[in-house]
Image (cartoon, rainbow, N blue to C red; front, side, top):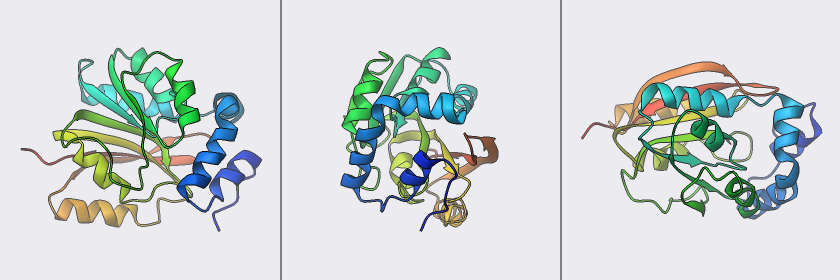
Length: 207
């Protein structure tokens, strides 16, 4: 059982069983009010935190993927920082419909981050991933595919919810580094919403 949240919406989301269809259904129900609930109701700042980190690492001309983009909050934050080549993907078609209305994305695709992603190796300069490494969503191995689809020495910048950080993330990152599949650039405590997170920056191996 996931750690309970005092927020009833989060409590429902955090206690999903993690089945893809169940997750899609949950976000279908939440898509219309997601931003009001999270940004206004919970003080959700993680999209801006990740966008700031991406902006410190790559130039505005970089090609980016917003992985688990939801309604497009991180994409909008990246666009505000001058990025124009942004694609997005999410497991929920309904969340993508809201993201599409922001007019900041090129391609938007339905993708399941618990499986192999339909992108070629080295397709992006950096990947942003906000709010997806959390209860009942995607575990540490989800980083493997994100690292695959960034160019050599490209970056993956992702939040990991503070409650699930002990669930093998540090060990998995260490294993990736030992196998020369990634290097750990930084792991920082950062603001998220009602809870905190680890802001994790990994780099793909150099060519």
